Length: 133
Picture 1: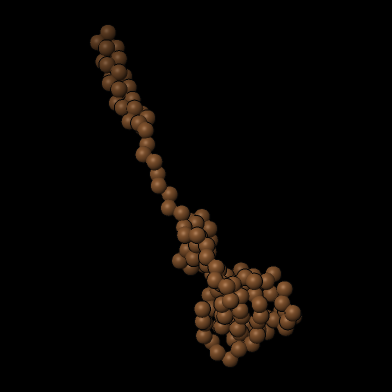
Picture 2: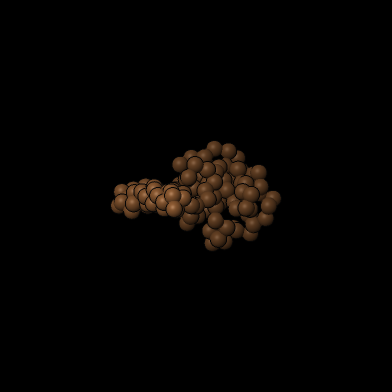
């Protein structure tokens, strides 16, 4: 009989200990503030000069700025720049320079910011390796 009272007392004591964290977790939570990245920006008529390169995923980029291949398809001299013989050569492009601020779940190349050129007006071979914005 004494053993039964000890077991019942133990069960009641442990039940009270287990119930306390559950009661604490039912308290209302404070609202979480989510910081969204800045809004994307674009600047028209920017001239980009640099070395024609490719990323690991075979995307074109010049001086760290991504170039969408579909944008090059719109140009009249697109066939001239279609093959890989331009890799490592210096080129000049003119178009709309856009900056995309990545969310935490996006894959960006560097620093949570991705720059790309859209609405490309021209592309031509250049002699200098500088980038001007």
